[in-house]
Length: 260
Image (cartoon, rainbow, N blue to C red; front, side, top):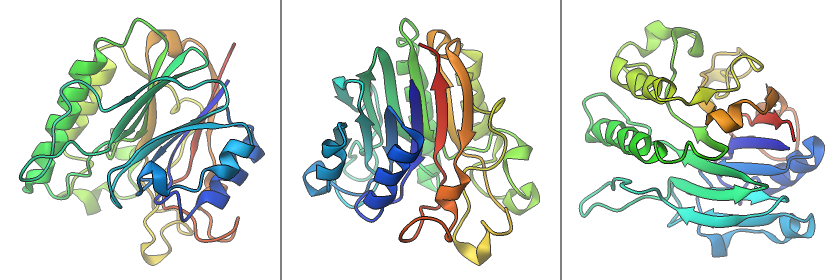
């Protein structure tokens, strides 16, 4: 089975790229983040014509997650138990979607950005990760993957110049500790061994062309998932403005292969 995760930065804007990506790499399950639309607004006919089922969770033009599968789509769950809300009044945003695909439980996750360390959104981000960790403690019993845009650079090697991020989110000790807590609790990050390099490049000042990126898109697997991983890669071509049709997302897809 081949599983991928991709912050697509608007599914409506990049549906042609998504369809081409699925065909080029023969993807069985694709988890998307930042679809930026409600399900009824999405152009899904091309995906469905290719044999894919789609589950999407979006509330408005912000955030939004989806799972596209050609190996089944069962037990679809929007949000996780205890997921915190944001705003006043607090709203549980469309940042988490779970589904069972071919016997594997997939969670498409779009972790809050945090904005700045002194911003209330930063506290929301840490709370969100803590609540996800609590909920995920109940998911170890079956092959499960927590995939998506984590908005955390777990190590200094995951950022092109850590000095530039010294007073920014993504690299602060509390964020890194929150990510590490998943690993300490039995989740394995399964892509780093097979797929070195960055997954995100800002549109600013030709960051992609200069390879000044961040590694913030990850696949964390339960023991039953991790033991089946045979390989992984980052599809950098999908971030390349010279490749494909239309403008690219600022993220590249991350692809994982499973035995069986």
